[in-house]
Image (tube, rainbow, N blue to C red; front, side, top):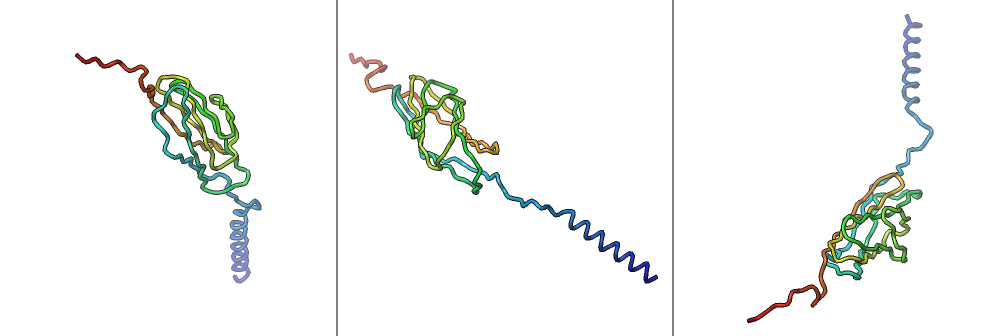
Length: 152
């Protein structure tokens, strides 16, 4: 009877050891993908053809992982204009450009007198995307395109 109890006890200990050790992994779990946001200072709403609007941006990371890379791209759904960054690179729509700084500026120059809308996308190397939308109304220059008032 004692031999049977010892055998059951040994089998129980071995089963418990196999269960506990099978959950172990030699690889260390390191979180690589963290949430992030892109914050901007208030941006002007009105723009005229040829005028440039400054967009001040800050990338806020939820955590740090050395191999995380960020890219930026844009798409213009309304109007016509140019977007460039603070080192002078003029962006082409839907082309990705490396984002190398956490604090950066974008400059949008209006090339039309219509309402203009641009969507800016910041994406990390893990596929997370932050979208920012900027809309600019056409502000006609003083004295131009204004009907003359008549007095009788």
